[in-house]
Image 1 (cartoon, rainbow, N blue to C red):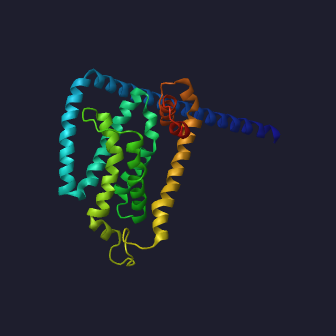
Image 2: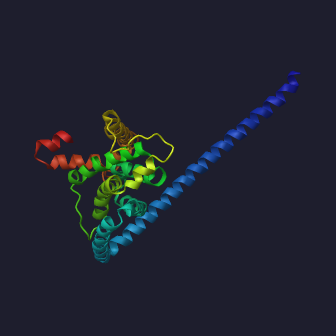
Length: 275
């Protein structure tokens, strides 16, 4: 019996080793495919960015023209059809943020896209497209848009320069969400009717609600928790997971690095305390 068992054990061990080797080969191929895909995307991003730099003067002229016309058109839309402003914002975000990633990837600035403004804008996009009737999520978005994103325009000194698509994008990323949620809150009462359709409890919708605890929870406490979560994730990615990458390449920029450079150049106490 012992002699009969030995071939079976050897066969099982051989099958197990074959399965194990097969899994290793698949894992290795997956890693190689991932690296090749990443390399192809990086090369394409660099190629597009280089072509843009070669035609910088022409692009600046076209950008200035489109920026001035777009600004006038947006102001008209804001007054004539404010209910369409959220659609303009969604179109802007899905168009210009991927283009910005391509340009920033070439400049080694792509870690800026981990900043809070992009985190918040992604939440805005998901809310407007998939959960437009969620009152609580709307309140969180309103708090983000009218609070930290609006203040960031001053803190980061965003300037509306029509011949720079990068600066226009920076301004709109921080400014548009505030306009979007302001128009929904004040100029689109149909939104609040939709929040509580027939058959639901007849409670007054925000901003008409008088419950202070409810307002403090969804306009301050929950947004603060969401902001803290982003701050923790940002710290883990930038200062822990990608730390060696930043040490190897000082040209890679993040918000932390930019703030620290500003603090070194500044002579006032405020910047040094912040950074």
